[in-house]
Length: 280
Ligand code: PAF
Image (cartoon, rainbow, N blue to C red; front, side):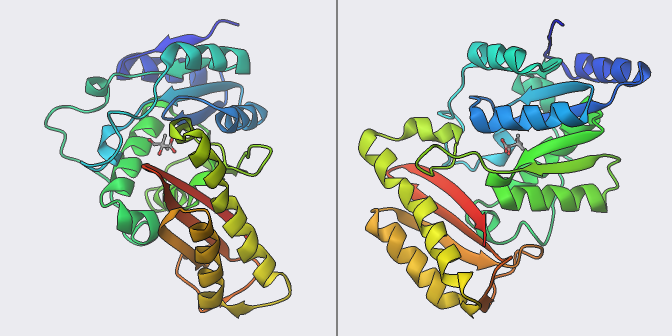
């Protein structure tokens, strides 16, 4: 089966309407490209749940802050298209920025609770950009099911909330984090890591294991667990943005850490900001 490569909003919506007209279930995998095994696992998950999978590849300027890495975010469209074809995608949506945003675009979506802490507090406007582009992608690809990665735990929670509160008629699936053999969570940004940084980046998954070990025997003071995570991150010379233990549903910091809570980390490894998380 040949894969459609769609660039304009109109082409994308027409394709989606045709699929729906033919009685097909559409699965969406939204990405910013530079695909890795983690993305491919999302496509595989979508294929199990839909007849026609569309992968969107769009580095969304609206979710990057002025001093963030929008311009240098890694891109390789030819390689991404090849990977999508091999993974069995029915369509890829690769819009240029003007196809997604009118120069005077003035409607944006803000989630006001789950997105306010953690990455939302450190990256003002980030989840407003994510919600807006994801809502647009839903309207353009008309999916029955959309698959996101647990690597962006907070993002998945914010999107679930948006889908609930704005009544989008689709199912959200969150697929597990895919890790390198040594535990580093796969990320397009890992390409920025030098040899030494790649070794130090292991501090994130190690610190999450420290948190999991700490609660394995029963609840304990979350502050003590946060300190142990921080110590592990510092041991790897990582600059901590946050190291938190939160309630899995509300994303509020907990007083006592226990199994079922989520440990989340954002840390700089050199200039590269990495995130990771683990349900304890
Ligand atoms: O997780 C990502 O890659 C992005 O935040 C998303 C969901 C594709 C929106 O731009």
